[in-house]
Length: 195
Image (cartoon, rainbow, N blue to C red; front, side, top):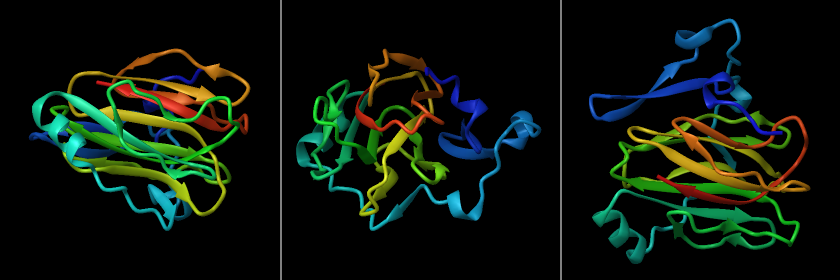
């Protein structure tokens, strides 16, 4: 099932204000239909989740152009290593779940990310400025990431998710966007992201 815009499902909306990202409560958009974050789901990640170190090559790339780099934490593998600008993070054809993702941007006005995780639903939003890693999902708990919502501070963002029993969903572009599925108990296995 292809999911609609992030604004209809996120517990918060994000806007660029005074050059930095800020979370605006969903009540400002549509209080009647917006889900409300609970204490259990307020964290953007749970478990012993630490962002992997950004490599010198990734730092050099981020220093020169509008870019997005990301690192997927995958079942039985762990953190795979940073990839950028449309490269595949995760696996295909191995039936392995993505459990978490770290994302860093440059020249986008920052990034906000939110993961939909097995047994938890939508976790909290992690918004970070350019050059700082946003981190969502879980590690060490054996839980699948089922969907991912993304928004940048300026311009657009595109992503494509590889989902259990579906395969590649097709590129979704906009700002904000959402890829993956909810309510179907299907794991995200891989992702590509561009800005």
